Image 1 (cartoon, rainbow, N blue to C red):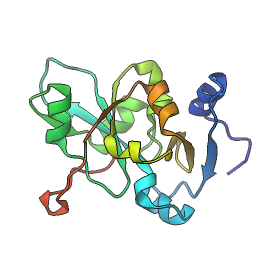
Image 2: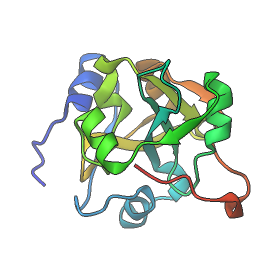
Image 3: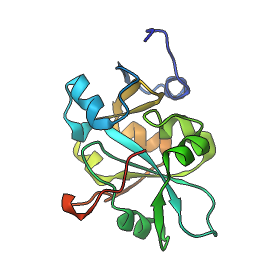
Image 4: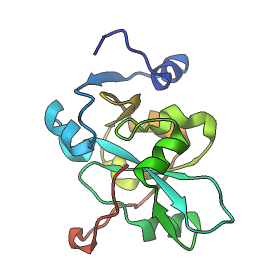
Length: 172
């Protein structure tokens, strides 16, 4: 990947004077755990952005849930936080169509203009910095949790399952 690659997410952070570190890896890696492994980072520091849809017609906009790479999204917890009765994971096709980004490169930082509600797992508060997608496969950004919260206006809520045997909610 060329070092001169700059994404909209990077431009936005630059325009606000927010620092970040660009982390490049093979665009063939589509999972946060895979990214963590290649970059030599703990998987709980590499967060994935999931596209979630309300299962009711009254709300048309998707939600973005940002959770640690080694965790599973608890759809019931997110539904409770949003006031929705039921939520479902977007399919890969839906996620890519709605965001205009490829799975493995979906980023709340690249989707600010859509004004979707963003929810960040409370575990992010345990870290000074986390790694999130830069809005393009093969590029992630290491940035301060406070900066991510400020820019995305994410709500901090507990979003992950505590019991891994409770089932898998998918990854977009």
